[in-house]
Image: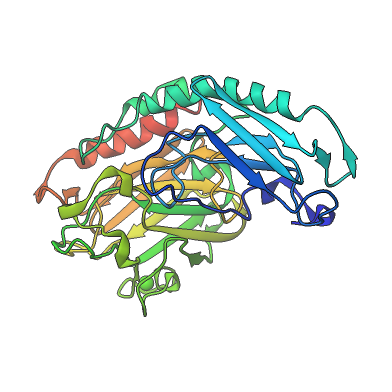
Length: 342
Ligand SMILES: [Ca+2]
């Protein structure tokens, strides 16, 4: 975190998540750092609002604001957020104070509010309904400098795959199994390493998802509960696997292997997140959400967006029915990231 080796890819590289216990309308947040002269205080933070432990960049863009080395009081209302800094803003990297902080934060929040409202208005209303296609409307595209839908072809170091639909196992506390993930560029297959911020079942670490053996698998933490019997959309990204490509790579193809026909621990839908640091940075891109096969899902990406091929065809793990919507899923995924490239 030192200014001596800081670059912006480290934003969200250290991140603290607060659990409010339940959905709460927060009127004030107070952040206490070590105070004037403290060498471990940052000058700027990002606030992320989310409904599940893992980041959900579909829910909101982060609010980025300058903070005090001492106490920063962030007051929020339906008009946005403003800050009061005590002591005043101090540039921890340059060692100088400035007075721009509170005004800037207020402007930022007000500018972001219409964007947040636009995002919320197209969120699924709950349950496990059809894929939400309305998020492909260009309302989420703010400007060239702002995020759009994750497209691994654009070149990122990390791709996270989050569960976005339940598994057929009837036990609520059963977890998602990912047997293997492969990633390719125009030069060939990449060597991947994997981790999970949502935890793992003992004996089934994330490395099992990238070991070249489609028989071995990563099993997510059972505490999240992926079963259709207790699924709700707040669990999207509740189990998530992060792939490290080693360096920034333009991925042309991703292959996701689940346990196959009849496997009780396969999900019917996933979210892809593209990011530059291990912790999610929702400023980089919205997730690409798509239906997947219980077997092998091949996701091809180009500068036109991504399409998916499902072998076997899409099976609704919650309803227990196979449908022709595999083709729909392909179309939706294509439109989904294609429209947002405009
Ligand atoms: Ca494996």
